[in-house]
Length: 74
Image 1: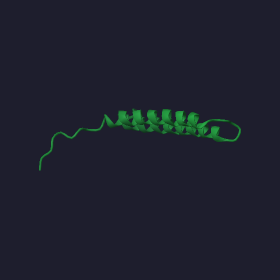
Image 2: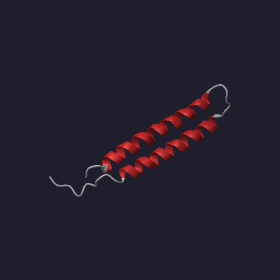
Image 3: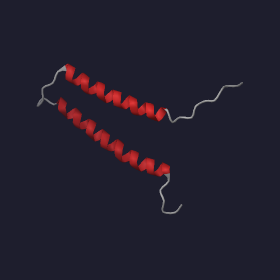
Image 4: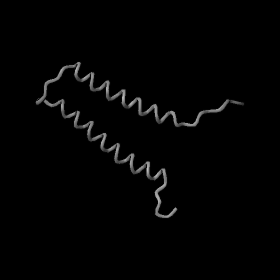
């Protein structure tokens, strides 16, 4: 498998880049809190609701991939 990237290595490489990009974009949203902008509590609630719903959906998609416990026995 020389020269070929494993699935886990590819995941780590892409996840690292994508998470860093997401963090940068979220920080840019945070910049909107500066005094140079005007916003309402409703505006900020919409922003955080949308972000949280997106994060919850992504987290759920990862959780679906977890192995299920098949029965229980003592």
